[in-house]
Structures are given as C-alpha cells and as structure tokens.
Amino acid sequence: MTVYAVNWCPDCWRAKKFLDAHGIEHTWVDIERNPEARGYVERVNHGMRSVPTVVFADGSLLVEPTSDELAAKLGTESEWRG
Image (cartoon, rainbow, N blue to C red; front, side, top):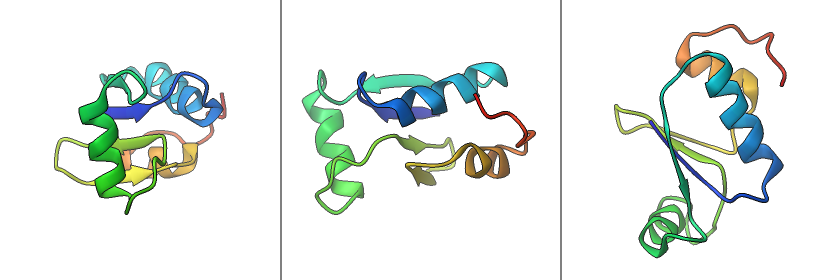
C-alpha cells in the first residue's frame, strides 16, 4: 500500500496514524519531494493534488479517505479515531 501525501496535511497524518495503529504496512510518499509521484496523483485525481491518495495492492485507491472508509476497505475496526 502506498500513501501519497504532503507533510503539512492533517488528513494525511490521520491516515498514517490509523494505518500505524492497525499495524498495516505502507509506504509514505511526499508528493512535494517527488515530482513523479506528484504527477501520478494529479493523473488519478483529474489534475488535482488531492491527498492523501491511498493506493492498495490490488490497484484500487481511496482519495482523502475517512478513518471509517479506511477501516471498511481494510476490514479493520472503525472505532479508532486518532
């Protein structure tokens, strides 16, 4: 799983904390430091730099997901609010 994010984004950090709290391995990619990643995010989000953009191993993605949306996708508890 890859989380495309920026360091100043509270929603990005919430997603990271959620994944960490559930022991879910992921790669954090700062799109401000990685032009290729920034281009990918813009392509999949119709020109927008929407973060976090979370890409799963099956190729599916969630854009700006809530904790509940992450929990539903991953089959984890949704009570965590971090």
